[in-house]
Image (cartoon, rainbow, N blue to C red):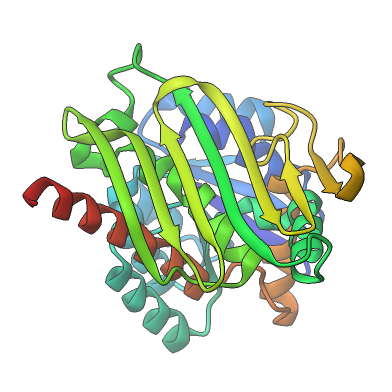
Length: 328
């Protein structure tokens, strides 16, 4: 394979235009060469970023292009599994937006197809490629805060005024937990290296068939966790890992630069606080570069499909626990 990974994008989403398209274009060892979109106006915005970009009117035409090595899939959630499978079967490596599936057993099918084809497929869980999260994981796992006792996380925004958004539509796999619960749950799992023993509480508020507020608690081996995710609250992002001898806190954990400066705070005995800053890190670019390194050399990838499956299994368990409460 060429040293440079040649990328195509399936769908001209706003996020792809503003974040992942420019990241692919800027990443070392990557080249954005094609886009598939049925909207000439949306496609033109990508051409403005990457002059000479090939534009296909449908997704299958892009997948048939032999000059494309990998595809990025930012389609609505309910289409992720379908188009990931089609891309793999067309011989393309796949980076698909989160959640990569709507149920854990669907990821089993993707794992099997990955292993059969020998191609690299991953969920675009970009935060694990950011140095603030790598540092937080190192601090927690090397005992900087002593014994971990509790994890507290919040990711919220308010899109009540945008009812046309796909996140508001159950038929598209919408809802706050699929959109942002993946972050709080997945970050907890990745930093601690543990899976939940039980979901102990799931208080979910629904509007129009999608969850808009979720207050969830879980028990892990040796520590508890509580997360709030909402599409109806004032924007807030924070994650804290609380031990018996200190706290690791991330102040802009999920959208650094946009939400605020990426910082890891280590709070220790005597109220001492050590702050590490990562102002220039771009986790989208880091993600593309890490993906390319795995394709080229087989390097270990920080977020394989098995990790994505673990988070989706948590999501499945949260919804199951909420249904138990409704039927109690």
